[in-house]
Image (cartoon, rainbow, N blue to C red; front, side, top):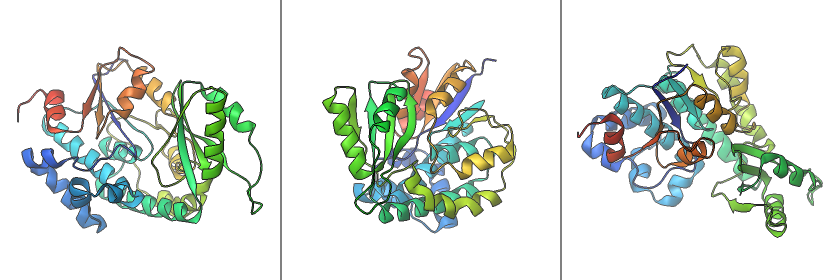
Length: 317
């Protein structure tokens, strides 16, 4: 089945200071979404998003809510111009924005959950020093073989943890775990000339067992979320498949913080619907780049600024 438009939502790390400033000036109604989320959550969105500073916007507690709200506001701006998706998906945090865009969860419910998620993950980052790194230029199986060669325990006797956190594309894999072993493995990969390794600017070991206490904290919240069948089909980046069984999906969402992001599967599932275009709703072009590593011919539009919004909607206002 061919569809006209799919929306994809990026995750943490795509934010930058000043994002949204031009949009709020040209389309002041977007400010209503930001202010509404601020009122619902009691957390600032506009100030750190527009003015930063960068260190503040990079903080997990701030970054996740800002990105979620920005994506939700942009979705409304697109809908106001008649641009709506026939399929939605999100990378990690972006899945919560996709839930709202697809009608699976209300904005207020999702915003409150994002705040709890960010707080719980931030606490994990303080409890144990973790890190993430992108391995670029080899396949996930090779990365898994390298990880298997680095077992062992930390000085305090606890197991040293490192796992594959993101299957981003056939040639890009993200590893996550104890900071020391992530650095050790990265150096080993460089020394053996297996691939390029890029440390990621994140606060901790997301999508790894080191986020276990955060997952435990969120279990009750996810169990009580009023999920419902949405008006727009959604592909989950936890499973890489279409969401069909709500209770099965609820269980997957409850384990999202420690489970890997299967973006390669997700992208292939989206591409299997032969979309005329994919719109990356949010700042940056990270997902556009990853999807094009699978299908270089796919039409993909960024939508995170005034000019990009105009290009997607075909309007001048």
